[in-house]
Length: 80
Image (cartoon, rainbow, N blue to C red):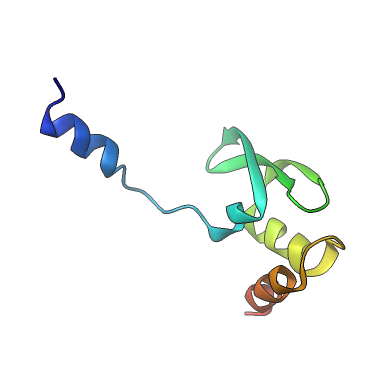
């Protein structure tokens, strides 16, 4: 039997929500302080410690395999 407390605890974990970058980058092992190993879903470039701003820059400026819509989305974020 599951109590209401247990289901509420799992439903609302709190904290900052994950960035939308993780739709285009595969998140791997946690390496500390909100950082994860990461791999680009388009060109398989690997980061041992993925920083969201570096991942966005990669998709905006360096990934030759990313679709144009993805490049435009992150290019506008990088330019802000």
